[in-house]
Length: 180
Ligand SMILES: [Zn+2]
Image 1: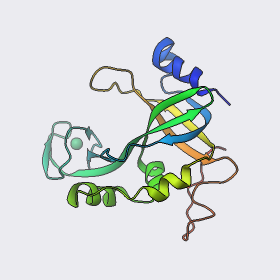
Image 2 (image 1 turned 180 degrees about the vertical axis):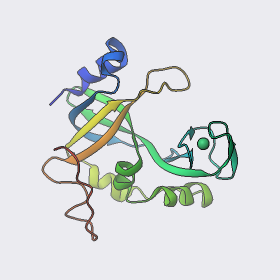
Image 3 (image 1 turned 90 degrees about the horizontal axis):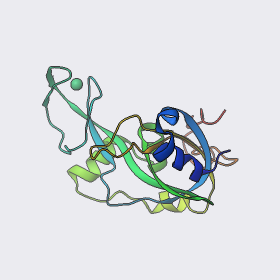
């Protein structure tokens, strides 16, 4: 098990190239999630190219596909993880992100864009609070638009001892595939 603080130092400042793409495992808590964030991004349904500045779903011309294409929403949000050594804002997306929020990407788009509402997060934060998770993270290979190094991306997470989603959810869900 690695110490978060060391990983963050390495990936953000000292040896970014070495750690790029490498998966590391930390034990940490999910300490903070900004409920005002968008919680989704739009991507081209064909090539999966991400369009970070657009929020409205419509047909558009994808320069990568070189033709008219559709947007699909993908769940993505920032969440802060904390261990004894410090805190770091990480990115979680797609299936593990949907699992954490108990909503699909389509539902998030509907709530946030169509209905202009907040996501119901009270249950989510209370389920995460005070628990330690085994979290696999990887440094994003993509640079952010302002040129700062990519964030840590959460690939999978599991509560220490319990697998997320298994005991409490009404429908059996195989979200395991986690840490073995
Ligand atoms: Zn495309």
